[in-house]
Picture 1 (cartoon, rainbow, N blue to C red):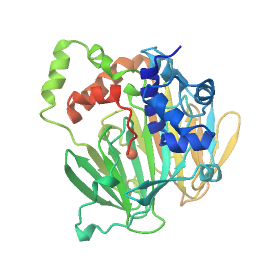
Picture 2: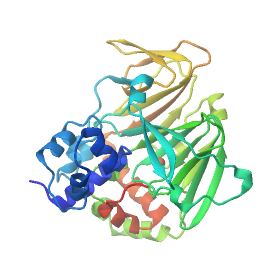
Picture 3: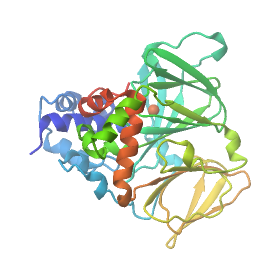
Length: 366
Ligand SMILES: [Fe+2]
C-alpha cells in the first residue's frame, strides 16, 4: 500500500514540522514509540492504527504520504476562520530536554492540515548572558528544519544561529522579528524570566513534493547552472526587523526572500485580500474583534487565528492592541514561480547538497 522507506521519511518530516519527536507523539496518542521509530527507519510498515491517527490528525496533511508530485496544486484554503484560544494552546504544553536541561516549553498555536502555517509558542528556559561572551554549547542548537521561520520575540530573548561551524548571536528585544532560512541551525536562550517567542514556521514549497524533483522545476539547464554558480555568493541566512515597526506599520514583503509573505503590525483596522491567501494572526496584547460574513470572534492576548481572509474585518478594541499577521499566497497560478524562487534560495543558502538531505533525512530536528 505504501512504500515503507518513503512513508518513514515523510513521517519523520511530518513530526518535525509539528515539533514532536517519536517519543512525544507516541505518548500523546498512546502508541508504542518503538513502532513509530521502526516505521521512520523503514523497517516496519505503518499499522492501521498509526495510519488512522495520521489520516485524522488536525495539522498533519495526510496527502503528503501519497505519491502525487504536485500536492501543492491541490492545497486548498481553510474554510472561514479557525481560532485557537490561549486556553486551548496551554493544553498542548510539552517540554524538550537538550543538554540535560529542560530547555524549551512548546505550545501549539492555530494550525490546520490544509494551511501552510505550523506555529508554536516557545519559552526558552536556559538563561544566557550575552556579555559573558561564552560560546553556547553545540547540544543546544537544532539542525535546522525544512520550514521557513518568522520569529516574534516577546521580552528579552537571545537568538543564536550557525553557518557551518561558526556560531552567531544577537540579543533580541520586545517585539523584534526575524526570518530564518530553511535548514539554518538555530536556538534561543532567555535573558529574563517570562520571555517567549512565537515561532511562525511555514511550509516550504518542498514540503509538498520530493526534493529530488528540484531540477525539473528549474526552468531549463541554463537556470540550474545559474543557480549552481550563485552558490559561491551565498545569501544571508537570517534577517532582522526591530520592534519599532509596531509604531509605524508597514509591509515587510520585499524584505523576506519568499516574497509571498507579508507582515503587518497593529494599526490595520480592516483587512481584505485578493487571490488565494492564507493569513495567520497572533494577539500579543490587548483585544480585538474579527468579523466575517457569518460570525464575530473576540480575540484576547495569546489567541491565534487562521483566516481565509477575503472580506474579513479586524477591529481593535483597545489602543494597546498589538497583533502580528502573516499572509502567504498559495495561488496555484504562481506555483512554478514559487518553486523557482524556493529552489534558488535553498541552493544559494546551502549549495545543492541540501536537496539530498531534504529527500532522505529522517533525523529529529534537534
Ligand atoms: Fe525553528
